[in-house]
Length: 522
Image (cartoon, rainbow, N blue to C red; front, side, top):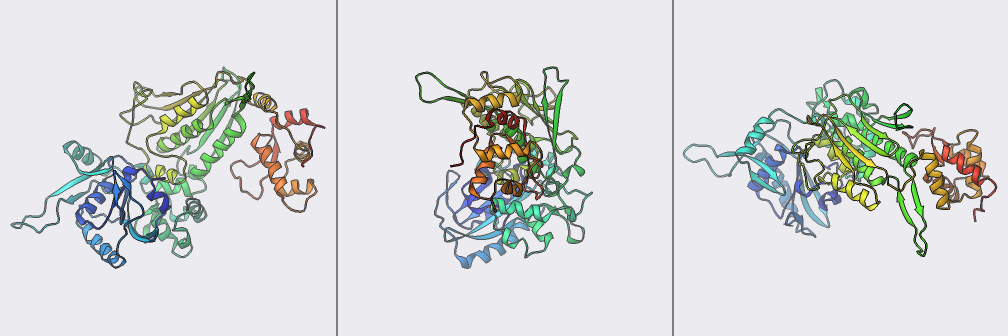
C-alpha cells in the first residue's frame, strides 16, 4: 500500500521533522507499539509521525545505507502489528507500506494523529499475572523520544479527548464527489509520491483513504476539511473567507487602495498570491559604488521573508473564523494579518524574543501538506527565517505582533531604508533602468502589440514570424515576465488554455524609453 509522500525525502528528513520519525533497526514489538501510541496521541498537533523499520539511527538521524529487513519477515511483522494495535485502548490502526530503499527491504508505518485520542498502550506484553491484566499507560513524543506520559502530560491528553484539530475533522456538509481527483493526482505528481502510479488503478474512495482526506464507512464516507481546502476548486464555499486578500494602499491615509482576492485550492492561493506580490511590488535597487567593481543590490522587501510570513499565516490561521489572510501593501511596509493569534506560550510580551518557541500547531494536516509541497518547513523556524531574510537584505527588523487576547497575529516587514518610497511601478522602472535592463527587438514588438490587446503564446509566435514556440521566444517572454513588463490575464490559473499576456504600467513606461533602441536578438 503506497503512501502519499516522497519516501526518499521522508527518510532524509526533508519534508517531515525528525521529531516525527522514529528509525528502528529491527522489529521490537513493545517499542513500536509505544511509538504508535505516542504518535496517535499527537499531543502537540504535529500530525502524527512515522516508524521506519530496517534503518538504524544515531541521535535521531538515520544511518544509511539501511540494514534492511529479511523479506520473509515482513508479512509476519504486519500480521503481528495488527494484533498489537488491537491492544491499544481504544484500538488504532496505522497505515503500513513495505518499501525497497537503496536495495534493502524496509517497512514504513505511517501513524496520523488519532481521531479518538487519548490512547493507552500496554507497558509490557508479558502474560497476565494472577489474573490481572497488563498495566496500561499513555505515551507521548518529546523531541525525538517516545516517553511514558507524566502526570501533567496525562492531564493534557485527557483534556484533549474528543478534540480533533479543525482541519482533520469530517465535513458533514460535503460528499466525496466534492474532492477533485485531478488536483489530488497533481499533488502526488508534484511530491513524486509512489502512490501516483496506483491513483488510476484503485477506487477513488481508496485513493482518498490513502491520502487520509476522508473518513467513515464506504456507504457514508465524508471528506475531511483538509481535503476540501486543498482538493476542491472552491473551498470558500465550505469555509467562509478561506482566501488571501492583497490590498495595496496608494496613500498613507488609506483612502485610495486596490484589492486583489485569491481563492481556490490552498496551494493555488498561496502560489498565485506570492507570484502577484513578487511581480507587482518587489523591486531590486542597484547602487554603483566608486572604486568597487561590484554594485550593491537589495530589494525593497526580500521575497523569502514575505513567502515565509504568508505561508505561516495560511498554516496557522483558524478556518472556523470567517476572516481572510490579509496582505496590506503600505507605502513604507508590508503587513500580513491572520486570525486568531498565536498559541501559548507565545504572547504579546514575548513575541519579539529571538529564542521564543512554540511547539503546538493549530492545523496539523494543513502543515503536513504544505511541508510536502516545500512551502513551509514546519520546524518552528518561521520567525528565524524571516529575521535572517530581512537581515541579509539590509532591511530593518521585522515586527511580530498580537494583542492581550491573542485575537490576531500580524507580521510587519518595514521597507528597506534606501529603497524608493514611491509607487511600485515608478520605483520598479527606475531600478530596472539603473540596472541597465535592455529589451531586444522581439520583446519591444511583444510590448508594442500588447498595448492594443493581450496576446496568447500562439499569437506571440505568429507576431514574431515563427511557426512554433522556440527557445528565443520563451526567453523573450520569460524576461518580460521576470521584470513585470507583462503579466498574466488569468494570474490564478497560469496553465489555463485561455491564458494571455497583458502589458503592465511598468511595461508601458519601459516601452516609451526603449522604443527604437532595441538590440538584435543575436
